[in-house]
Structure formats: C-alpha cells, structure tokens
Image (tube, rainbow, N blue to C red; front, side):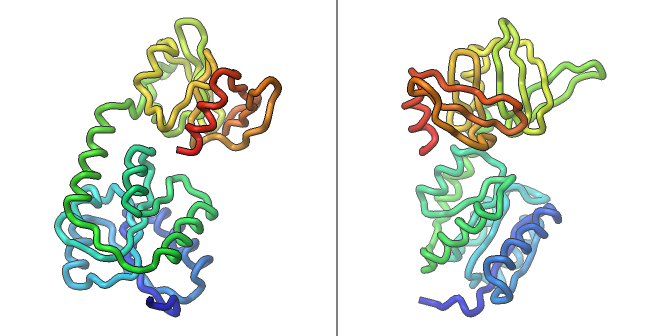
Length: 258
C-alpha cells in the first residue's frame, strides 16, 4: 500500500471560496505533504484526466461551471478514490456511500471534512468506479430533482422570494398555513397546510416530529432527552427547542441513523 509521504489531489470545484476552504482543510489535515491541481469545468476536467489520470484522491463538487461532474467520469474512467463535496441531499449521497465513495455535505464543518479524509486514509487502496455507476447516480439525481420540491415561492411585501428547501430549519403548522424558520432565524409564511407539504419534501431530509412540526436533519444542532420518552431538539435559527411526540421518538431515532 502506498504511503502518505506525499499525495497528489485533483480538485473539481467551480466556486473559488469553496476551493479556498478545501485547501485550508486539506492543509490542516495533511500539512505540506500534498500537492494539487484545480479545475472548474467539465471540459477542463476531461482534458486534464485524459492526460493525467493517476491522482491519489479526487475532491469533486457535483455542479461545475458547464455541467455536472458525473459527465467527467462518464467520459474518462478513473481509478482514483473520490470524495464528493456537495449540497445535494441524502438520496444521492446514500448511493455514494453504498458504493464506497465518501462525501461532505455543504455547508460542512472541519470535523465533517476530516472524517471523510480519514475514511480515504482507511480505505486508501484505489478503486475502479465503472461508467455505469456514474450513469446510475446521474439518473438518481435527475429523479430526485423531479420528485421532491427544491424551493418554495414565498409571497413577500416586495414581491415573491424563492426559498430553497436546503435552508429550511423548521416548518410549523398554523391552521391552513405554515410558518417556516430558515437557518438564519428568518420567518416565512406559506399558504399550504402541513399535510400538503409532507409529501412534497424528501423524507430522508425532513421528519415530522409531531402533528404540527417538521424539522430538517442538517439543521439539528443538539438533541436532549425530554420527559415521557420524548426528545428536545435545538434547531438552527430557532430560539425555542422543539419536542418530538412520544409516538414517533423511536422512528425518529432510526431516521437519524439512516
């Protein structure tokens, strides 16, 4: 097995702030024992990998300047381990995990990134990922985008605001309406009842913890025991804790570990 004295990494990332964050975390983890190449588009990635395809590790976003990174791996087969750094939800990420590819979900912490790199170190032997795997992942991505709602059009005084579901922390039922709290603590009102919203949202990401509240997994900051087999959740952007009903607590625990 090859040592970690010096590794060479390919970074597929179109956003410069995200690229700089990757470099900072890589430096914290590997020190000065790594070198890297950086490209921002599918076209650049394909051209580079066609000439040099011996990277120890690839860190890849899903969306690049001119398309999806899946297109790169359809055109150029690589044996390099890949860590996807992405904002996409668990349906796609679950497929990656099943096939042994690590991921960090944006916005990610340094701890999340270190865990992915540690997995790379533990499973350092290169693997070959066939083109049909990436075709399958692309198909999953397209199906999920069609099946579950990615954003809501929220009516505001100044017009209509598009609210991405990835930033939603809590949805609270209020009769025939729902109040949404986003990750920054801002409140939004939507003219749909909670029963209408539930089938529109990805059940791998959102969970109905009681009759009137839905929470987003990525914005759960803390979980504490509560009375009568219930749990108290601290949600990002919310001042008050929200409480699971005793009838769903067991199912909620299972959902957290999926």
